[in-house]
Image 1 (cartoon, rainbow, N blue to C red):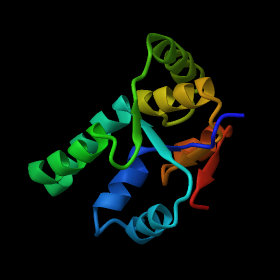
Image 2: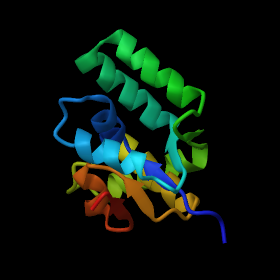
Image 3: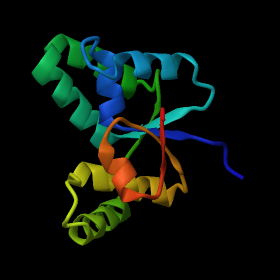
Image 4: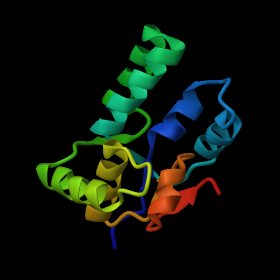
Length: 136
């Protein structure tokens, strides 16, 4: 059985970085007590540093981006062409949800790697219904 990993979404990364975010205390406590490795994707890297830049400035985005790119806080995985195809299928199928294409790439990656746990404050991971979302 592969070691347990937790997929980390933009909503969790942003809450961790932005001290004024409502979920910041929960995100920092979760990471501080973490015993399972975090992983994330290049699509999440893109989305997160763009969000950080828009709200906290360029230098904050660069600092956080470097930590992710150097895998200091999580293993960074690339989305494959197969993941993108599966993500497109999810995106088309769930027309009644507010899933972004990036959300769908996360779902596809998690399914491919058989991951069942997501560190997220984004309601979409719960709506998709296939993962345990932490912190609860």
